Structure formats: C-alpha cells, structure tokens
Image (cartoon, rainbow, N blue to C red):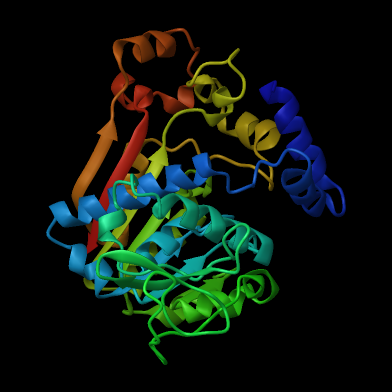
Length: 351
C-alpha cells in the first residue's frame, strides 16, 4: 500500500469522531491485521525466547522465573506473557497506553499459542513447566491444562479430574477453566494465571515502586515521543527492584517501507521535525525516529546502567541506500553508521 495513502487514512481517522473505533473494526474484520495467526505468534515467541536466552547469558534468568515481570506495551496478543507463564513465571503485569486487549483476542492468542508450543518439534517445548488452560481441542471435549506429568503435556476432559493419557484421578491438583470463559471473562482468566492488565497505566504505574524484577518491551518504544519516553523510563526505573532489568527490542528503520517498496528504509530521514509531526505522524500512528544514541542517553539520564546495548549495523547495501536519501539537517548530528543502523536490543539495569 502506498505509504502516503496510509498516513492520510491515519490522519483522517484520527480527526473524525469514532475514527479510532472504526480503525479497530477495520483491523479486526476487514484487513484481519490483528488476528493472532501462527506466523505472528511464532514471531513473538522467538522474541520471548531471545529475552530468556539473553537473561541466561547475563546469569539473570532467575530474576524472571522467580520474580515479577512487567510487559510494557503488550498490544493485541499477550504471547510473551503466556510463554513466561508456561516457563514458570507466577506474577506479571501487562501495560498498554490505551485498552487494546479483549476477550476475543486473548482467546484466539491462547488457542494459537497452544497449537504451536505443544508441537513436538517446537524448540523450547522442553523448557515449559505448565500450560495455560485453553479452548477445547477441535472435535473433542478435551481441554489443555497447565500441568506437565512425566515429561508429557497432560490434557483433561471437562467434568472430571485426571489425565486423558493415563486416566488417573488426581482430585484437587488443578482448577478447570472452560475455554468459553476466556472470551467471556478474559480478565478473570488472566488473573488466574497471575497476570493483570492495565490500560491506561499512568495512574497505576507509581504503585509498583520497587516491586518489579524484569521489564520487557517489544517494538513499542519507537512510537513514544521524547518527553513521554523520559517519564516512562523514569517510571520503569522506579518500578524495578535494585538490580532489576529492563529489556527492549526496537526497530530503527522506516517501517512504512515494509508495505511500500517504492521508498527506502531511510525515507524518514528526509523530513524536518515540523514536517514529520504535522504531515505524517498522527494519534493513530506515530514514530519518534530515534536512533540508538537517543535511547542510550535517555536510559542513562533515568539512572540505568547498560550491561548490553546491541545495535544491528547497516550493511554496505544499506549504506548505499542511505546515501541516496536527502537527509534533513535535524539528523546531521548523527554519523552515517548511526543513521544506517537497523535494530536495537538492550538490557538496562537499575543500580
């Protein structure tokens, strides 16, 4: 889709009454861009697995598994929190700026998640300690439950205790949560997994002071302007216990180029601040155009140390693409390599 048409649509929908609801309706029912299809859920599972591996390399995996997790900017699919629950994390908070989760999205995500992680070939299956209850298996009355027994995923039928695999009676080991209850009362369902959802989060955030062990944020920070980002980093720092960790993944390239191949990954660099804010950004879709240096400066300003700050540099091909873009003077403070960088992954630690 032509990127200019896309931003025009965002501008129009942002300016008309009910435009946000209309956009959500179109995403859910027309474009299906919010559906937790296997490809989207698998991508989030890969990111969640990367977080776990990065923590293990730092010798800090126990902070997650034995602590409290905050997912900053969960979005429509709570895939990573479901993964962490399945790996043994007992308390999680999910934050969004505005409410985007609903029962339908939670139920569909759980169903897709279970379909993926119970496949024998799924690489991290052996690391799961339990599974979230999910909708009935197709064509059966069997429900997944959050248990493992003798290395096997255990499933049960509603109305009785015991395993589908061994037929044993194990009264009191777990509580049944029929799949239909996910959509009907999704907050209660998440609560039973030790997960609470907060959107908006500004008033609740200060109450978490010193209670969080690990914060994750997946491709969210690129949408936050500088001053709100400063506030968010301050609140994240305040919410962490001493030694707590903040992990984030962030694209540094122009994401409009994903859908419009007529522009380069560096198209965003040609616009002044006024042009970008007034002609392109909108309440429905905005990008801050930060480079890795900007995130580092704001993290250090908030008081964080940075045990890992990993920037994916541009290749020679990317540098050639960059050289073809007329760069606005606003970006002259960055080096050519900084502007060409593709992606940022960091681990920040509270002192």
